[in-house]
Image: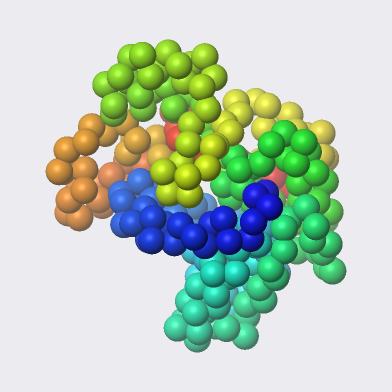
Length: 260
């Protein structure tokens, strides 16, 4: 994780702009759909949920509003304050605990029914990622579930061709040129899904479900219809339909692994 705790907080205006895009909406709506299904399988009572690198809690505060006990661990104080503000607005602040800490320095004090690690791995180098997997295994109770979302390098090549129309960019990405996020101005690391699954297995996890996130929306050309609010329901319907089909999984911008 970046050494400066304010590295993400300094880009909050860019983050707000990102959240208005259709691809951001797809990312959160697909994950929410999958998490609702996962929680239903874990049990009916209030569950303990850990959100590692959860930032402003967009994945997890909604779960606090459903009555679950949420812990968010993140190093960015501004992001965590946004999570608390969201919980206060939703009347669920008592269900939320926030911990400001680098993930690699934090030590858990309990186990959880569900642990989230969403879009954290792309910001870590390989050595740091190797430390996250044992932590994730440690915090998930026996019979619990971990949810990991990582970036897919195949999608980076496809989006350069279909969305950007830039064959040379596609070739550079195919050869491993790193991609930078415009939102946080940081380099992102993508790993093939098979490598992520191997790391999960080495940590003692068994992958139960594989979900493709942003299969179609990242390939749509830059056209006003892509941003038309009336188009979004059809985009989301398509994304949910494609999300669990093996044929489309490796074309997705990101892959969500549900593991126990």
